[in-house]
Length: 534
Image (cartoon, rainbow, N blue to C red; front, side):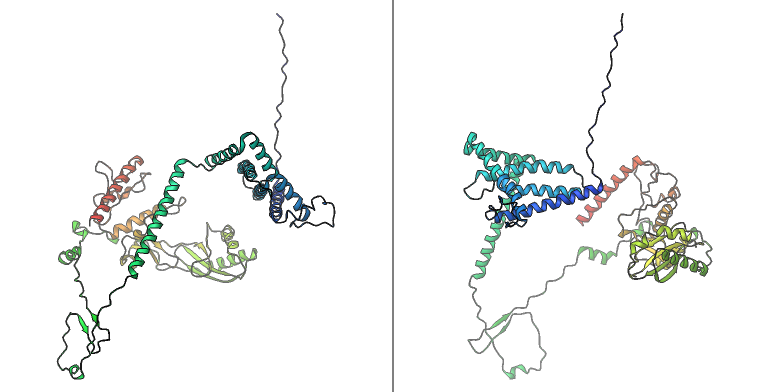
């Protein structure tokens, strides 16, 4: 059998690539379209006022002596006559708007996909408006243009006047439903709301009129007697007794007006039940539930020998100061003044740059300054609130240990009158930093590895344990790593809260966290109910 060889022709598929404009071409083309659309708009507006005077110039376009009244002269008169009179009428303003919008999108490099929708619906609306005004065309200026007039005449030849009106109305309703998503339900709700507003305004106006009528009614004037006592009667030697009775001032002249003043007795203040209970039994002390509980002592915390106060290394300060000034000077940033505040672990250098130096210029040099100082990392505070300076925090070469015992034993923490005091460390000025957790209902601790998240969390728990009684605070601890919070298992009987069927006080299974949080929400709702009934 003879084998039939079939020749396979490889057909190459050619893809049509859309021409792509460069960034510069896109900007230039966008400016051109935006200015063109703006020029068309100006010409169209001028055409509405000078179209009759410019009719003679349309045939004399090449005559330089002939001038048009249009703001863009003969070019504006000609282009306006083409688009408005012989074109789409006043609907041509939509065309100039679309051209301007396209130029703006190209200039700012906006996504061009919405432009397709704008042009599609814009052209349809332009045709509808042209035909709509052509439907009401008169012998004067035709707002629909020649296009609108001819399309309207064509439709009326086949559909008649009423049929054309129905078609225009149908197209208008279709646009509202498709484009603006108008539904009968929305229309009913809109008219009901408007009807309710009209009723409320009518009722308010009616009520105000009734109030005015009441105010305009005649009020009977009281007859007031004024009695002026003689001089002999006013020189009494006996003490005056004051009684809560109506005081009547009389006069011998009958034409005068007497004034009767009645002194109203003050209502007796009723003592609130809670105040009486506090007075009889005293304020409730939640610590009475565990009266024998003893707070942890400072001996449980490790004491570090830090050698007293902060040691200041003048050589290090001078070297860092010169390095900072020299680094900034390399970038043409001159410094008027520099001041150093030595802290336990970092030193704050406050600088005042010369006038005219932008703060952002200094902030952008954070990595360069850290490289010059050979530091692991620095922090630029620009500007420091309330000081008018720029701060540069540089880590000390020999940082001082800030122990938990030193901040817990500080008078600022021991004497803190806060709901939930937290001792988080010391500030740059070596002062104990104490804050109230009750004023921070949402607290988030985040940072890279080795930045002190676990230390901060342990400081929070330790502060509350040293300051609050077990009857005043409970903890719900979640430890997904299973090794971070194991030390706090010892306080399970006093401070840790858990579900009745839970074995471990510290939650290590993430699937059990949801049930615990739901139980906390139920407890919160119960407390809200108690506050409501109180």
